[in-house]
Amino acid sequence: MLIGEYTHTIDTKKRVSLPAKFRGAIGKKMIMTRGLDNCIAIYSLSGWKKVSEKLSNLSMGQSDQRSFSRFMLGGAVEVSVDSIGRILVPDFLKDYAKLKTKVVLTGVNDHIEIWDEKTWRTYKEKIENSADMLAEKLGEIGVI
Image (cartoon, rainbow, N blue to C red; front, side):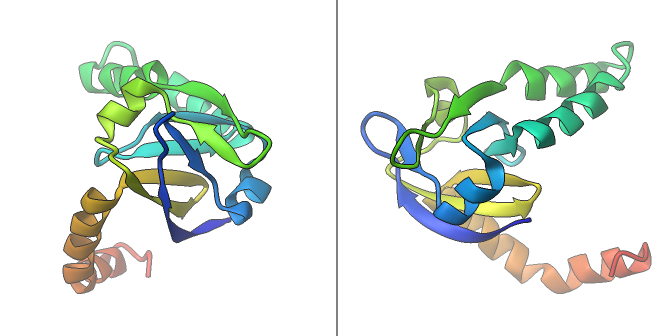
């Protein structure tokens, strides 16, 4: 299980260090793609296989399903961890997530997300301010 929040710096060569706990859980090779809410999502190879299988079951006849498949699959790239625990963020993903110098890596159960630090703070504040309402909605459908 991937959990936690870590702040790191993305260097001038577009590399970011993965926390040791994440490296141990996700492996040396992983899939990086566009995430929701303008972050980057990183999956282990086995985790990505599950995601891509679900995406392959979407209908190409439905515009929204076709678009979401393109969004996730078209933005996916395999990356490897280097000898000192860094991964290279491709330009198109760095631009998509508007990553500057400081980034936040968050563990979200089955994947990691990389956020621009300022974007993450704004998003997190919004969620923290609506946590009670979100809990109530989840309670109504039996999640909590």
